[in-house]
Image (tube, rainbow, N blue to C red):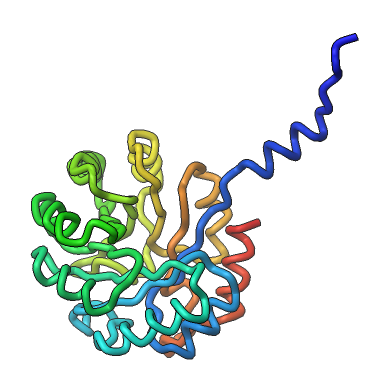
Length: 238
């Protein structure tokens, strides 16, 4: 008789092979905050460097970012460190990355694909993530334009409100994000106004590599809400 398959085993193997949704906690400001967050087991943290403080409340001095990244490499080496910058030239971004030494650089500004290529040429081991602001259907072509550079590790879809290019606390049109996701060959992160109360709906869009949260896990004074971070992370990983 032919060997019978075990449906239960097949289902279990299918579940186990499904990639876990990644979680990035952004806007980390101190070493203490970073360690507390990492103890809640996200996959990555993000530090903001070089932003206008009025447009990015969680921007920190470069030396502080260096301290956070160095500490996490020793205490939480499995957690990726993203350095966010809105600089639009390769040289500034290269200098930031050389000093901070993150695993990833997240480019939020209107940097040209040519400048992105220069960063990769100078720092071939640095993972580059380009933020695409989903303000309309033109974001679909913008994502393709950057993907064609061939040097991105991922793209991240975020909201934009006025001159604020992150930390807006506002969602965007996820149907456009879904279209970008379907047409991209890269891992795609979803950001913009995510929090525990809408995370399930975001996950139902399906197919994203990871979710990125900043203001959705903060208290009114800007400090991180560790209870919300734990809940958000567990929901995404679950």
